[in-house]
Image (cartoon, rainbow, N blue to C red; front, side, top):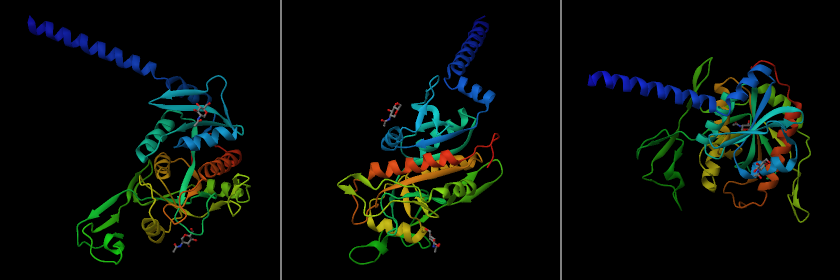
Length: 327
Ligand SMILES: *[C@@H]1O[C@H](CO)[C@@H](O)[C@H](O)[C@H]1NC(C)=O
Ligand SMILES: *[C@@H]1O[C@H](CO)[C@@H](O)[C@H](O)[C@H]1NC(C)=O
């Protein structure tokens, strides 16, 4: 008798659970959007920033016009804004920093807004390349994810970063040994490969190359101007990892070892998720600081972000979106 009662309780319990999870599905605020985008299939762009200062620059540009009927959706602590930039339908979201937040947010964006045909990512960056002045906007052609470290034992060889080489005042032995930078595994519908480098979409890069003469902001105010006229720069590479670089020796190491020009903490995550889904991505990074070179400590962060927004907006105005998802 007791066993039978127990079985009834268990079955009722399972039914109750099934009901709860169904309610949760229906309460998912993105559910309606997902269906609408399926039906309309209006091709759109995902736009991602990581920081408040980047978002402030987007707001200040006045270029992002929120939808009057459906301006945003909140999900998992993120606000997904829906609107247009220069006539193109856009879903914009701020991810917060660190690769894991950025990757998660990019994935949510692509999961729920299935009309997205590619990702535009903007923000600021540090320069590790002495030929690249503050205020310029870099559109990297490839991005190295320099966050997978194989920290080898003392006395090992074969790593790129040997600590003893940086002993001060003279090179020598160092118990921290050496670090080897490992590739990441990039899986998509077509292939699985191990790679350090994530490549931007060549078609989108060639569209963006029309921006090389774009006029950018040179002055924060009439008394505080950069010595050079900032430009949009192509053909450079970026290093991306959860490491804020403000160290002259590491700056030089990255430049010499990977031939990268800028460092940031989010673009590899955006790139990886986009490539996983076979979607194009492009990155616009305004150079705001020199990552630990002598003249670091810049006041050009807002200018760098504004310039990145200016370039991203012009790109959005130029890019054509296919009606079906493809590269
Ligand atoms: C940008 O604008 C949106 C929409 O009005 C607002 O919710 C958000 O707080 C603004 N962001 C910043 C950093 O001011
Ligand atoms: C390093 O990158 C620059 C572009 O930033 C490129 O012009 C140059 O050929 C590269 N050098 C090497 C050794 O790969």
